[in-house]
Image 1 (cartoon, rainbow, N blue to C red):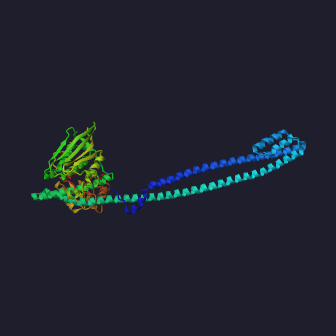
Image 2: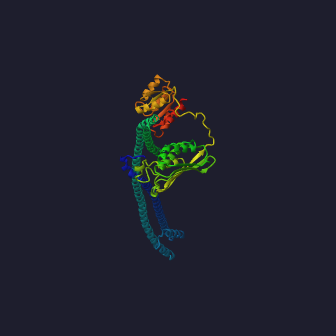
Image 3: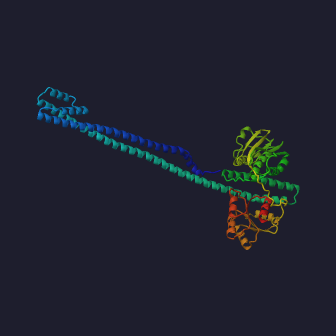
Length: 570
């Protein structure tokens, strides 16, 4: 039932790949982390290999220095003694082997020494080796400088490149996050607009309910009053048709309102004492006239083992049965209708009942059975034209059952009839205490307001006349106020009223504000019955929370009003 404003539809369409966009952002962040780890590994490898290269070069340079020093020591020894000590020769062998130097010069030196060549020749060979090693030292220092420079440049370039790449990825992620936030903001705005649209829709339903129910209350009430006056048979028949038409229209309105409540999750399911026999009796009595007019026999079968006192929601059960029986009568022209109630499952404190409503009517095509419980669906395109209805009745039945832990199914054959079967769990009331406080022998129209003064706050002229007539008929003295302000003025002049009938939607001062003023400013405890034509969700709770004692919707039944009055003014 919730509507999305048109101006946001174009923005909501691109919001559908939101999940994909989130995945892209996460993927980019993952790649950033992987790149960071990879960069660290590459940098570690580069530093490690460079370190090894520098260490190797430094070792060679150090060995070269030692070789130069050793060669110089050998020259000094030759000059002074004319020989090269064996210890120095061993040092030259080790150092040249470690450095891979003197591969050609050192064997020549050994030959000269072994051949006992003159000291001058040995000294010349040593000087030649000294020059060679100094040249290698220069080369190795230069190579080492190149390695250090390469490492420095590599580290600088690597850091710069990594920084730039990370910066680019961060900018892209930030751009995606910014776009994501903008999308989220648009989505929040769209949701807020949808909430406003939903609120406007609920307000529209409330206004439409009020605007339709208010005149219907007058039509129905005046029709009921007319039926209680002496009429010819033809006049009674015509007045009865008016009443039945009103009841049909009420069913349509109630279906739409109930569907709205279920969709909003605001439908209240009661857990009170009920009798299956009583519920079935009420259901059958409502359809006595259409059954008689079509000459359709109704067979009712109730398992005698069903406990007399159960707990559940009798109103919703009645609503489900009424809908199914109404459909059975509507689509059956000859044959019969059966209703059976059996026990499906039972425990010490709970019981699941199986209800079956069978008719011999037109049946439902096989291809239509799959979606007859869908909203606004009917078995064929001409059903609404031929028989009327909103297409919500079976949808509401199924949803009401599922809200209470039950469900419904259907079997049908075209031309032979249909069988609806549903199950519903109930509690078993083991501690039932009969209410003996009320005298059940009282006639429905005994005078509950005899000698009582009633203040009626109602702005509709027809409903004023209707409620005044109904209350005077109950023996009451009636004062009419056109709005809440007038009602308060009457109460300030006379606070001896025994009952207040309060319409909720009135000009100047509505029923809620008037009740608040009566309870908090005037400090009056006078019983107040809320009378509303809106009948929207949570309204009953709001009325009781505001300080009213009872709640009734328009159109109302006279007997139900008298019953509420009797419970408040006794």
